[in-house]
Length: 291
Image (cartoon, rainbow, N blue to C red):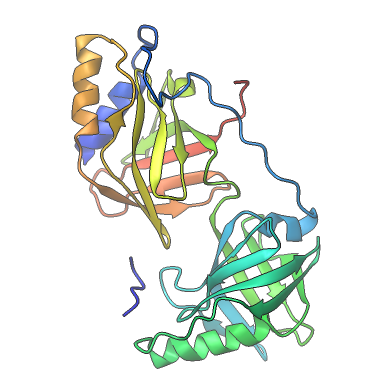
């Protein structure tokens, strides 16, 4: 059966680590993170609202057929991701798909499904009905691409006026790009970090994460599933010597257990812990500095 849904100590430790002063020089170590990562360059697209689709993952919020709106399966069960290689992958809610796609600034045409996937027998009847209607809209010919409310929401509308309402799940270029921490929110209170310019994360499609803290480079796991990401303990990739206090904080930080966050496009990215009393939130932005 397909799955449709995939403390405070951690927050305090991370804040203490990030606000510390920079330490001694990097030690030579295989696979170490550089002090300044190479900025990620956004590939060029067709421009317009069509270009905003490229490289991002979009959640299907609802479809409208003959003027009637029908809500999508919960927890990003239906989604679409547009590649720079003229393909589109996604899930109708019960069935994954991969197709060719022709995208301009204002129009989208989706080709024949190349995945060969079949619907999940355990998928509820209501969600099967939703995906049949969505599939008919998406594959029924040219679609007009337009802004719905803001830069994070888009509609794909056919010539009959039926449309798919999309909301950005993950920003363009999430994987392979350096993301710096702008600040942390704990209990809805922003925490200023003097050393945040030194800290960055790089998320990879294989479920790993690498980067640099104030003191040492690190690696670990960051597994994305639907609208969530689970961060696992981090391991040093360098052996930089810092003060005893900072090293102790690093030890405790890297030993923390897994923690699952809600992923929000802002249009950069935030990780929000909705289950813990401390309400920890990571706020990231793209690294745009000089390497």
